[in-house]
Image (tube, rainbow, N blue to C red; front, side, top):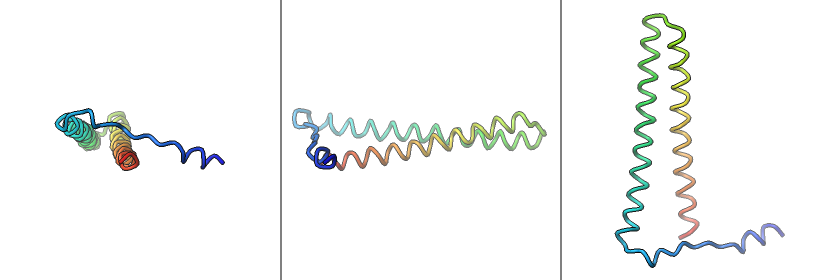
Amino acid sequence: MLFAVLSDISVHPDLRGLPANVVAGLVHLSDNAAGVLLLVSGLGIAASLIGLVIASVIHNGQLAERSRSALWVSVGAMAFLYLAIAAANYAGRLFS
């Protein structure tokens, strides 16, 4: 019963009223935003690894712990970004 009700729901975005360059611009904007977020996450991973190396050289446990936490946050942000992109691609195919 629930599946029948949910399968009756259909949503289709109406992009016919928008100029083609606006639609292409929105696609480029989303691609660029994902690229920038991926770059920031990659820089966070690199900075965390540098912090871990420095902490190992100077034997600083507090710096090592903070760098390790920052590494997990950066890796988690990158994983979340990939999941969000996959979900957006899946949702985009649903509406076409």
